[in-house]
Length: 451
Ligand code: CS2
Image 1 (cartoon, rainbow, N blue to C red):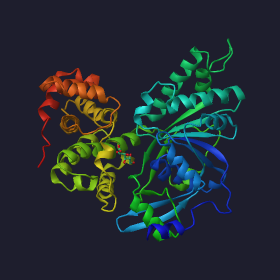
Image 2 (image 1 turned 60 degrees about the horizontal axis):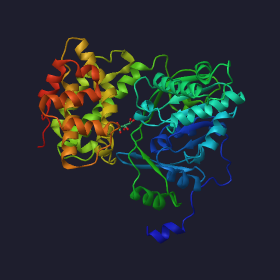
Image 3 (image 1 turned 30 degrees about the vertical axis):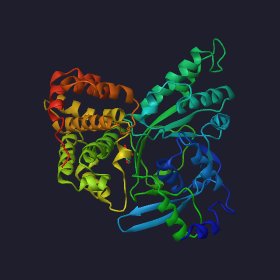
Image 4 (image 1 turned 120 degrees about the vertical axis):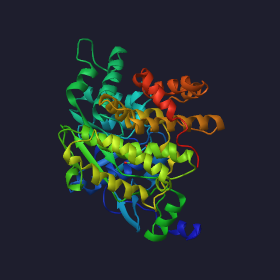
């Protein structure tokens, strides 16, 4: 379809159907939020009662584009044999994250029952006043002051123990506001931190849906196949999974009827996802790029990368013992998902923020193997591949993103085992303190070489 023909098409919007009332506030309006939480909410039988106000984090323009089409967008479900198109209407408002007045107003509103988060792994470690979590805290201060009542915060980031990590980060920021006299609590009154401990439930989750970046071709395909203009479609694999544990004191959509699973204990499920899926992703991102591959599917087709992944899965599986985890079926499904030839999931995208990601994906498996009296060679190989990758990237001047980028660059300047030790300390200070681990990782440097 020509550009002129596309421009002549009607823009996607809500038509006569009103937006659902806002009861969920989301921080981190990106593609994954739209293929996952917004999609599950749209599929709940009570979707008409649960609208989402979604605030951008890093890309304000994403809110403008989506707001122009009244929050409505197309989900392109990309299976190995073709695409399915679906219009998702659960986002009632798409808002620029800089609009903190609207955020605070909605967080204080008694009708708001849930805050969901996709703010990226690294944000939970940030203490600056402008982080999304600091903005959340200021909104919660207003909710406390105005008597908006309890609510649930649901972290949907790939962080181990994400519920507790979110709670610790929010309480820490609330204590800071209390100490600065900025939380609105009068002297002698319980402060914001105490209010958060008593009124905010932090729900832990494991989230899963592979969602590569939308391309111009995807936008053109939607115009050609759907007969309307959508400047912000999202592409995702058919598979979607959401496992949650925790309380919702002000209610929630019936996500279980949309396929979500509620469990008592999230940790085993979280570990399965973080180690098997995300662990394999990180291993492929570093080893695969060193071997010249660009996408997950390409890297997995390389026997050397594939066997490194299988070896890592064997190690991780020894610590995933709950029968309902059904690790062999999960592994088989992952191989199929990763091999989907129609999804171009770029390794360069997955390689970002290595120090934070490896802490969740490789370190726990290595530590568990050592506790069981074994070396954890496959997990150590993943860390070594990251070291090789950042060394090559730094040497070639190629950009790479990491919250500890300056420290990574300084460590790369060192020589031999000292370099390995310094890099390992950025991923795990504990492991870097064990000489046998440093030696093991050092010996594995260069082991996934270019073909
Ligand atoms: C990936 C994840 O970029 C990454 O680090 O491992 O985004 C992954 O695709 C999702 O967690 C899949 O659910």
